[in-house]
Image (cartoon, one colour):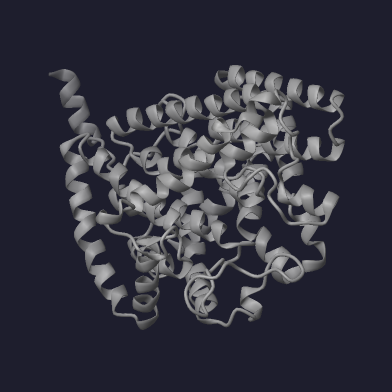
Length: 466
């Protein structure tokens, strides 16, 4: 059996086209690029920051060359290209810096054709193998994250991705675990991706080995408090909501969901017994309920619940930008890329986010009111379309796309596209969600779980005579 599985894996990778090999390379670089920058080749940290960009451009060219272009997304790609290339030309004529403009164009334009191409060309077998590989990687990743949480801030394990950089502090002397990623945001979104595959594997027979699914669930629960991220907790909560929504699509899915919840509760109880987990979980709980404005634990009487705190962090920067009179006076904005930390570090020697840290405020200030609002509407419509397709697929009994909504749709709005790791997870999350939501005629043909036995020849002859 092991020999047959090995042959199956070898045949799968042998028959991969160049385009799909590029997909895999993009996916693996997303996971391990941070390790290269932190530990293997820190002297190449700057060029490794954009190591996936040439792969993305190659993906676009190869899809065009081999006629694998995502035709149904051509209108969306054309609209975005005309909008951003027109803004690029106008801002250059207005005297903006060419380097900053190119960096901004790369930030806003490159991810979307790549994710559309991936989404249309990944089939069911590709998704299964990516999911299983994610679960395998999660096991050592969680051990690394526990070690990073327990290690001192100055430890080699908590090294930053560039000279003198450090990870974000969490509680006491602890730092947020970053795993193999440059910073903790990568490990957080990787955990969300792994959670979607874990839940899907538990209700889809034959998706992955049972021991791997439960070991991955254990590893996920252990790693969550080590990262100390409220955003990740909210995304996982949304995923549970999506799981419940999928359960309401039919009785069979509801029964499968119930079969998953009880064993997960048992695994959670076991994880709670770990000392490192209980301490980190307490710190994370305090952080979720923490009110930045008052410095105290949030309560209903203060009017700042955890949900309100999340909305405050996302909505307020966007509204402040729109209400700023200077925002409406500059129709072309300050220039694409001008608010990026990397551009400010290179051109001005500072690490300031001059256009704000929120993605919406940065987009609006860099693009100006017209292009900024159009770009925001583009992402909004794309999110609605992806969610609609995921919901339709869940009604057919395939909930994987719906489970990926927290990564593909939610993260699409809150991710800072300037940050390479966040941009990479926007691409991977949306691409896998689109691929999982494709119509059955466009997806790979499944191998039946039960094969009907053929009748012996004598019975077939009797049937013909009768």
